[in-house]
Amino acid sequence: MKFIFIAIFLLGFSAISLADDQIGKREVLLDNADVEVVRLTYPVGAGSGMHTHIHPNRVVYFVKGGILELIPKDKNKKSKVINVSDGKTLYLPTTTHNVKNIGHTEIVIVETEIKAR
Image (cartoon, rainbow, N blue to C red):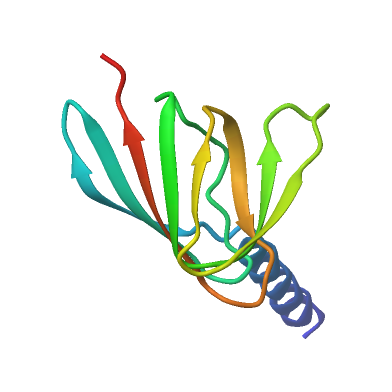
C-alpha cells in the first residue's frame, strides 16, 4: 500500500513539473527563399523553448496580446517583461531567447522574418 501511495505521489509531481515546461504551438504559414512567416500560440504558462533567430529582420504582430517574459540565453543578462496589446506590431533584433507567457490569457503572434541574401 505504501508503494502505491509513493508511486501516485511521484506521478503527480512529474505531471506538475511537465506542465511548467509546456511548449507553445508553432505553425509555419509561409517559408520560401525570401521570408518565413509563423503563427505562434502560447497558452498561459507556455513558452517557446530556447531558440535562436538567425535572420536580421523580424517583425511580430500580436493577434492576441498579453504579458510575455523574454528570457535571454546569456544568464548575465536580465529577462525583460513586456505587456503587449492586441494588434500591436514590434520590430525585434536577432537574438537567442525563450519567450514565456506569464499572463492570464492565451497569446497569439504572427512573426515574419525576412531572410538575408
